[in-house]
Length: 126
Image (cartoon, rainbow, N blue to C red; front, side, top):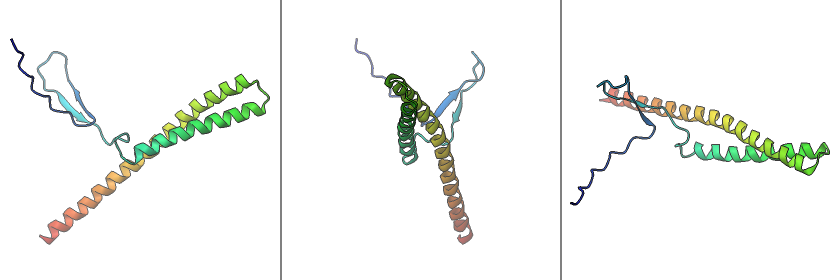
């Protein structure tokens, strides 16, 4: 017996989640679409990645330099440089993500205002 091919599933929209209310009830699933996403933005996603990399490098270099100036053994200042690199990476990542998120929101608001003005001009002309 040959198996019948299954119908392909419809792909989900990005950032789409389904929440079910109530367990075992016959209620319909509620679709919740999250807001803007920095990870999918073509310009800001790359900027966050670059900032994370430079933050890690700067943290590693700074902590290694400070530890070597304190006359610590090489193993200790390398270990402190590694810890500083991780800390710098995480700190700059959080900061870059917060800034990029605000920039993306500002771009969306500006585009929305532009579309509203265009729609208002179209309605007043017609």
